[in-house]
Length: 149
Image (cartoon, rainbow, N blue to C red; front, side):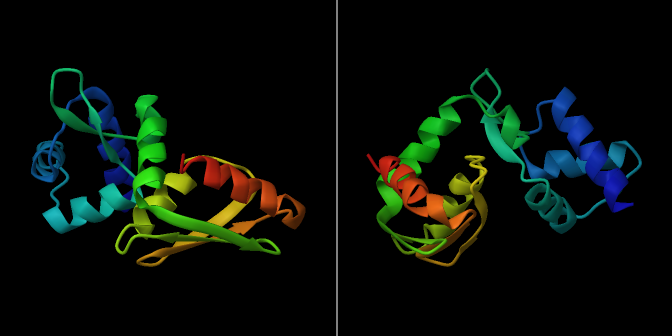
């Protein structure tokens, strides 16, 4: 049921402008898939849906890969406005950020698609990034620092 519901969500957002969780829940119900707002919220998070401009002044749900190239500018802005410092040791990189911003920084990192990053964990003001192979850790840390400028 969950897989079917999430597939239907992807189909709906691909073909329609859906701006809110309530609109998405109504669209699913009209397709014979009754859901609660909490379920829709979890599905949005699991599918990593984001809000993207729809071209007419509104914002719609979209898959991360549908985001316009401005998303790279947004990621850079997140780093410029939130990251306080970057340090590394062995195959680990630690990113210090303003309180409450680490989840956004971690998400921005995850969407960079750098193959050397095998994962990240974000707390409130710190992001831990795991790198493989470890001999490129310094280079990746420097690339992260370059996003701050």
